[in-house]
Length: 323
Image (cartoon, rainbow, N blue to C red; front, side, top):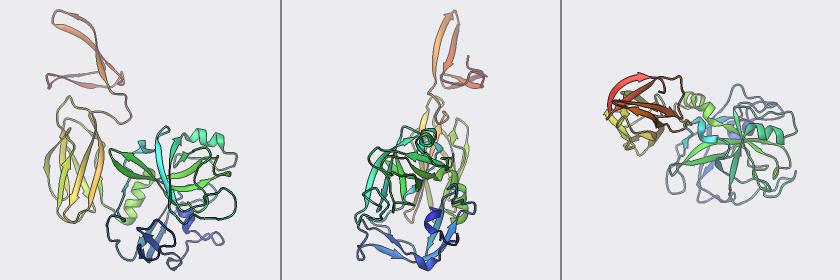
């Protein structure tokens, strides 16, 4: 989070020599088993506002790569705005206070907690201060538990298809911490800024896969790339930088994925929607009447004024609205 690397006396970004990055440890005083790196660069979001906590996000570049093992692994950045919807669950971790209050009593053992995601409106109604939970944020709340001092900047992750995605970083919250919502920066809104600053590998292309060919490109990838996809997606062609894909057939719908794997072991996955817009109610067809060679059918769950391609026995018939 940007507030973690800001000197509150001056408002400036702290120096790179003021912090050290550790990885692969679960105890704060473990100076033996972890990996430690110095900091080469700190990048604070240029529009960070400490008064409103808008754009509370920062990036740290370390002086040498981490060595991946069972204790140190990368996590994929969120790839969907639907990852932090109210009613879902997020897992938070940190070494912050385990007792609510003003004193700093950090935990020596890394703590983890699964917390419900609540709506921003609910969070604003529960809070009493002047800071608003904006669309660049999302809120978590679990009564008698929560995120506290010392947890700032810590991750919130969501589980999708047996894989965890980094969705937010701890930003702010009112007291008492164990009763008020904890507010996280919504990292999906900053994917472009993150990629532009760190030149991270990223798969770009339309989020909706249909029955026509679409091209997806791996930006900033390295090594020899192999493309794979879920069973409802067909890879038409591929090379080291891009893949052309389409839905495997006209009748399939739902979620899918496209994955680029480098021979250096790096894997990048993009979740996609196959013949169905994310968040849309699955569509079905109702038969209202039939007479002779004609059947009157209507789409349920779609947008009544939108055009639809109609297929009969997987062969294109015509384009009409929802009837």
